[in-house]
Image (tube, rainbow, N blue to C red; front, side):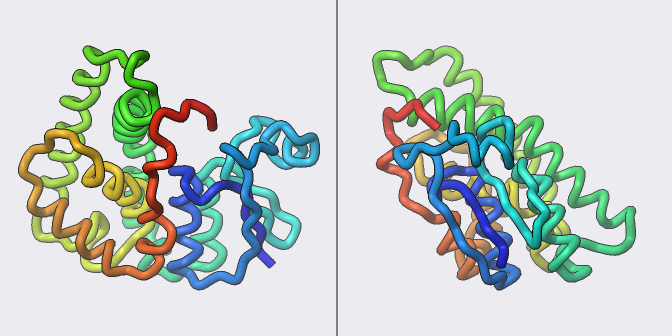
Length: 215
């Protein structure tokens, strides 16, 4: 059976759990990190020497790093709509995944969610937060433009490229921050919210993370 380590409210774990839900994979989930601790446990560090979640083990194969896990699960268990055989089409998902990891996630998740929501008020760096907010809004505007004529980033159906970027939306629209008009992104978000796996694994209340700075 597929085994997963991580806590349900951890952003990178949610990406993986969402895909597991989409694929309908039977799995065993061990809560790790945050209040549960365990990231410095020697047995866990044997699987991931970096001491971070998520980590999966599938029939003896251990994989860490959320996007590596997404690609592994899609390659092993997904169909061609999720993970195309055609390398040119597959590169489209890869581009969105890598852009999300290198641009959107550091700006929004680290620069706003962590710096604003998860940092105690007295410790917040407001100039930096506002800079990241402006840049984050620019990034969501790029997604807005990319969704013209499309239901999902990859086209008519959910693809692997939607998962890293789409996982941001529950927090982006759930925080009291100014946002530009994003009708296509909002429609995309509504389509994602109609997916059972998204509701179960991404729409996890995060209020208990407010002011918490530990992983």
